[in-house]
Every structure is written in C-alpha cells, then in structure tokens.
Length: 558
Image 1 (tube, rainbow, N blue to C red):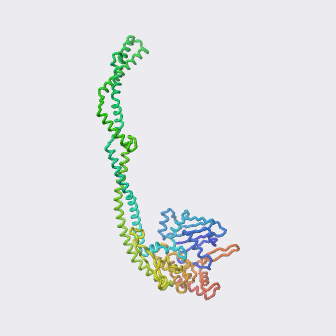
Image 2: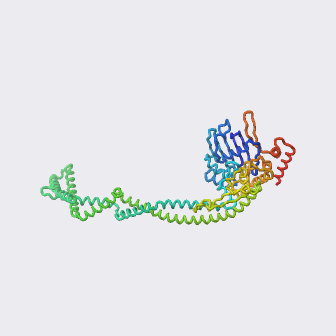
Image 3: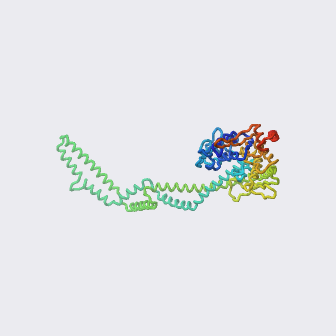
C-alpha cells in the first residue's frame, strides 16, 4: 500500500509530506484547494506524462516521491527482483521534472524509463477518476479481474506460457522450413562434392610423393645420361678418371712416406676422398640398377595428378587444401542433416504444445464462463444500489478470430454496461458520463476486491452527480473496500467523508508573496467540523455539528 507521499514544487504545492494509513482515507477541501493535484502528482510517479508547466513558478524542478509497502503484493516484488531493483525496505518511486521540461524517473534510486514506472504502478495501485488514468477501460483488465474472481490466475498463466512456447516453436520451425528449397539444393551439391573428394581418396603426403616421382620419370633420359657420365668420369673412363687419379696420387706420395706433418695429412685426405668417390659410384650403380622408366607408370602419375589439380581448380583452392575442404564440406552437410532432424522434432513439439494449450485453454474457458455470470449479477446489484436503478451489467466472452493459440486464451473478455433503462449494453470504455463510469468502476471493485492483486485503490470524485441515500451507499462501499486494503477517496459529499477511517483536509496556505497547498490529517473534532462545513457551508451551527457528529459515530459503529 501507499505509505508516504512527498511533493516538492509541484503546481501550487511548495512542500508536502504525507503519511498514509491502511483503510479508507477521505480527502476533502474547498474547490481549487488542490485535492486533485495530489492525485496528479501521484500519477506522475506511476508513469503519467508530464511537461514543464507542472513545476511551481520560480522553482527549477518538481520532485515527487511515493513509498509503497509491497509485503502483500508478490507480483510487484517479483517484477522488481527480475530487474534487480528490489530492496529490503519500502519500494520508492520518484519522478523529477525540470523547468525546461526534462523528466527523470527512479525506482528504488535507480534511473528507469517512464514505461517501467507505469508497468510497476499498475501492479501496486489503481486510480479511478473521470480522466485518463483508468485501468478499467482496458479489456486486459477485464480479463484479469474475471480470472481473479474465478480463481484461475495460475491456469491463465499456464495458458499464456503454453501459447508463448507454441509461438516460439512455430517461428523456429518456419525459419527452418523457409530455407527448405535452398537447403535441399545445398544438401544435394554438398553430397556430390563430398562424394567426389571421397572417391579421390587423397592420402597423407600422397601429392608430394606423386609430384616427386612424376618429376623423376619426366626427366628419365637426361637423368640416366647424367648418371652414366658421372660414373665414367669417376671410375670408367680409360682416358683417366677420378678414382685412378686419386690412386696414382696416393702411390706417388707413398714413396715419400714417413715425412709426417702436412704431407701425411694430405695423404689421409686423398685416401678419404678415394673412399667417398667409391661409395658415390656404388650408389649411382644401385640407382641405375633399380631405376624403372615405365611409361605406363608415368601415364598413371600424370592422370592421377591431373585429377587432383582439376578438382582443386574446380573449388578454386590449392591442391594441398583439398583435405581441409573435404572436412569442411562434411561438417556443413552434418549441420544440414541436423536441421532436417530438428524440423521433425520441432513439428512434434509444436503439435504437443498445441494439445497442451487447447487442454488448458478449454479448462480456463469453463471457469471463465461459470464466473462471468456470477460476477455480472453481483456487479449489477451493486450498480443499482449506487443510484443506477435499471442499470445492467454483462460480461461478454467472444471467441478469438484467429485459430492460433493466443496468450489470453480462447476468448476475449469485455465488460458491457447499460447505466439507464432502455439503453443498449455497450463497452465500458464507451460510457459517456464520468460520474457513472466512476460508480460502475466502484461496483466492480467492490465485488472483485477480495481477489484483486492491487491493494491500493484511489477514487477521485466518485460522488459526482449523486446525493442523498446513494451517496451514503457509496461511502459504505468505499469503507468496505478500505477494510480489505487501502482506499484514497477525494469527495465533496459529507455522507462519503463520514465513512472514512481517517480524514485528510486539503486547504490553501496564503503567505505575503505566494499561495501553496497544505494537507492536514484531522483529529476527531476537526473531522466533525469539516463534515459540518460540508453539510452546511462556512458558518458552523450546533445543528450541523450535531448532524456531523452523528454521521461519524454511525459510520464508526457500523
């Protein structure tokens, strides 16, 4: 409930700090004293639009702060927790409007957009007036009130979640299905390309080995000629060769053996060279003995390399990148296969979600139909007690035009009303009279208060256009609401004010240079005087005081 309201430099309010209690608080005062200004300021904390005109003349900004006790509002606590805005104390909503027209909102000290103030405000307080802040004009509110009255809030939440899951699954399935033709074509291409690479069966290091062997076979004649020429120079030439020259050199130096030093070292090097040349000759002979310049083998190598090079050119990559490409194509094809499997799975899930939705939505519809008749009859009875004899109230349940699962269920819920005999039933939003709308709203709230999630109700001049016994009934209804939560009621009627658990008096405080609004919480005697003033005008008489005292006493004893 609302526990504290602080207003600074708003309209004609200089400074106002107001502590509020549970129960019904009657708010009265002379016309123009600023009663509605308090509610307008509160509306700013709840996300209403503002402009620079609300700032008190001469001030640089207007600052409004409202504190709420959320102990009995789990939905609001959950809303705050989901956004990391919760704290251990009261919930504080604040709105600052500068003289230049800039506006800033805060929830528990954290900056927030105006939409967040409005969303949270709808969970914690409901303002009923003849103006725009009227949640009962929204069909969403009609559905919520009916579900609360029927005790089907949890079931309605299940229906909403089932519809959301169905929609999410359908969107994902449509996303995959929309790619169907393109994916099938891609799947076919990948399968063909991968088959080509698999048939190629390129082994590790095979390309390097093939290129080396092909190069050798391509130069076979020149290679053999070079090898034979080297053998001739090293060992076979009769005109002189390397080995015979080394042997002659060793023999020549051997005649001078025993000289030691450099001569001995030279002999050793020549002997080593002789050994290495002999080994080289042996390797060349072995190569020539095993070298096979097979034309068929060369043709095979050329065809194999041509296949590899052609496939690489086809994919516009280097031949060495073919193995990596094969792995990449394989992974992409696996992904497409997974999408096919996902499509089948999603189709099954979609059907399951729709069955679950239809089951829960049908159950919810049954509860709504049963509760709608009872709620309509109860509200209609209250309307007639509130000075609308012959008034009618009906709750229309109209099937959704779309066959798709809807978060609200299978039907739209709308409150229809006829305030006067002979008038057709119309939507609550089309009721022309503000006074009638306020009283109809009051009748609805009286019936649904026990199940409503909003504990604080504000009624701004619900007594417009009524008087006498009807006014007393209105006051009694507001008092009944206050016994279940918190009610703030701006009123001009003493019959309504007398029913309050407490009474707030709004008056103007005039100084030498300026006038401002002040609010006083009246004690018992002050309250009697104010109600007497409301009964008989400025001049209080013993008769008006006695009448006022009797009204207050009767209300408290009821």
